[in-house]
Length: 72
Image (cartoon, rainbow, N blue to C red; front, side, top):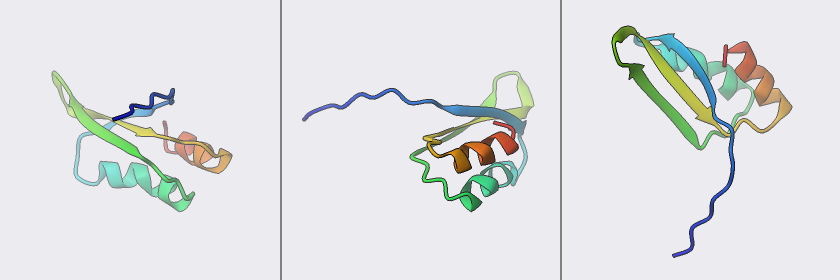
């Protein structure tokens, strides 16, 4: 089985660890037509009220602008 490795940029931000935080963050990206392959979310150790969300790829100018507006 062949393995392909490529460089990619993860867009990352911190959010409140609460129900709906991920949906609020991803809504502008979905509206911009982002086709994400990676969406990771995890709570920060020692900070029960904060979480981190990472997404990729953000390739077009439109989706990059949406990600920036979302705070990434």
